[in-house]
Image (cartoon, rainbow, N blue to C red):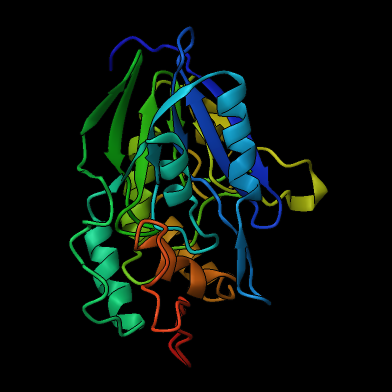
Length: 290
């Protein structure tokens, strides 16, 4: 790897969905990117709002930052993305891992979506392959394909920081589930081993935290801490043991509360389904599909 440099990272925690979004900027300049934004959604009314995204916008404008990219680590199943809103407000482009096409095909079948959903990833401005890079001022962003939770999961390496999405959680919470369509616990294990080859001082930023045992919410650890302390995949845990644990645990988990609306929106890069003749956009509710 090139010599590590420390980008400035500001975290925005959405307690409703336990999601962490990040504003990542140059250490000295005004260029920045946003990772894993949240569009607020009230499932009982079907209404959306931009309160969470507006907090990021306020920080951008206060510091007069130029945001070039809105990055997604994957197509989230627990919150809607605010990428289209941020793109419109900031003139940024939206990127995700190139295997989003696999996710679109998988969930296109689940929701029986027709021609209104292109399955080529064209809803996004850039599809990132493993090893692709983006340059944003002094920020050098390297995309690592780290599938397992979903086929399209990406880890973004920016200086001394790794934004791992749902591939890893804080060490006392472990790892994310692998039982969604296209998920694979063995593949997840290999992806995590790749992340753990990074220098031990690398900062690891996760996409979710649930405050286990009542501890304060947290989202930053290091590779050294993950190697030594991660309850699911610390050093010495074999692939066989991890897959057995992950498979058994996933079988006990309920589906995320917002998976049905979230996935339908997020595979479209955060856009809603096309409006019908009355001007209203609708989401599908597949019965007995999960």
